[in-house]
Length: 215
Image (cartoon, rainbow, N blue to C red; front, side):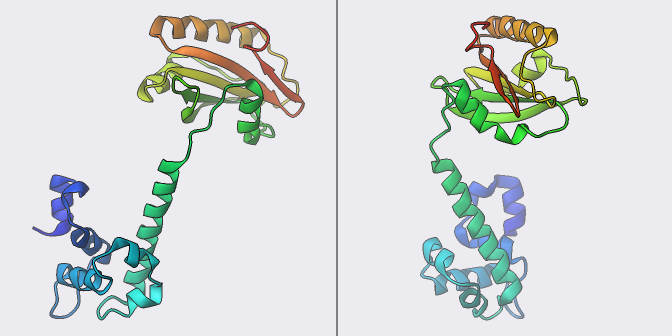
């Protein structure tokens, strides 16, 4: 069975390093199957992913039958692996104050339409995930608890922070904002997922329902 077929059937974890490399190489060379080429290539670097990662494109391409195109593809995949490792090793962002939330969501300040973002947190207020759930018109947006807590449940979150922007520049909450906050708090209490805060951000600062004692 070819490596590609094995991956589909058994999953990537079941494949050897040589088989995974063969999938990236895609084709072998005249008189040599792609898996044989992969084994030869890997052997040139002492069967070490570290050495293969540190090798230059030219060094990889110099292996007979590999060439520049295959070498570039392989280097790109190895770089993605490095970036994934770096991301996994990062210490989660801890949003334990509304000012941190405001800094964390600075990219929303200059948006021309209201955008609602849900930030899912673990029990220590570290960020687990974030998702934009609503993009409204220039002056209003609609938030429903089911949309917020559906994401929270999927992320196995202990709590959520809801953030939305006011394109007008004034972070003062409207009646609708206050009603939404009450509904979110009530829904969170039923589901056992805490509404940690609802923060409205704008060019002129922010409003935190928790800071103001409204949660």
